[in-house]
Length: 375
Ligand SMILES: [Zn+2]
Picture: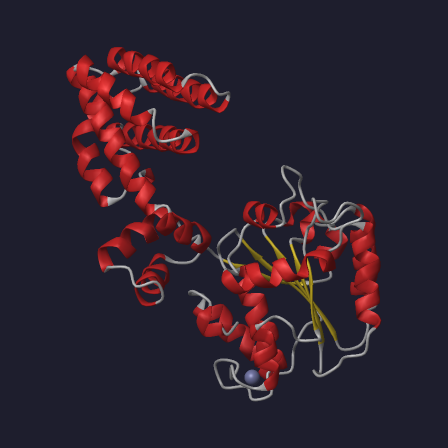
């Protein structure tokens, strides 16, 4: 990962490069930033720059033997630690090493990954990952290795807030008495669960959300979106590149949801019962997951329309198409009906989840909405 592949954060990149040029590399650093900000991507780019054999003034070279290994995340002096849990393939005492193949593949594909996505990839079902006691023994083992090719041995710890007390204390000792030429780069979303004693011994690098302008440029230049679409997605993703990528993927479904929603609201408003029954027939056929997504989408649009109605435009997150519809529709969602409408949509969502007969659920929902929409 090179710096140029990381979206935005021009100033931080310059600062990071500067510390290396000035030979002021701190042995324990914490890249703190919200999900999708690029904190992990920056830590990897920084590690790659540090190990690069032919450093350029503003980036690693990308082609030297070290960079080539970094690109595949297989450099022998680069180690990763991340939260894991048991799964069908790893039944007992899981550590990061058990999932290294999945990790490399996932991070190469998208270094903006979030926790939920990671747990989905390693298929731990609904369990939360942790960094365990066994992991801390493995960390020690890795750090006892000599460096193979680089000046530094670099350990990137993704989400140190997931360490249990034992692992955190072991890490604290390592930070207090660091092995020579070893660098700890921690990548965190939330410092509240990290030991104070660790926090007080590391250099903190605060990473803001990606600014709108950088996001827009990345979406047009890297992804190839039209300027208008890029503007929409940049606005909706709110500085989170992971969610921007997701939004693009789910765009087709969103567009379908928008059509269903506008039809549904128009028919309800006009009380066209026959057409509503046809609409119910249609939506009953799209499958439960999509029905749930549609209902979640509807809840979001209802909320945004309410905000629009009470004139809180700064807090409105709508695409242009949605906004065009909502400019008129929002007058029908107010403080009287917002809760009952929410409630009806939420109920339908949980009924679908519990495998209720979907035609009945949607017809029932439609009849409620007809009554609730203001005339
Ligand atoms: Zn290089």
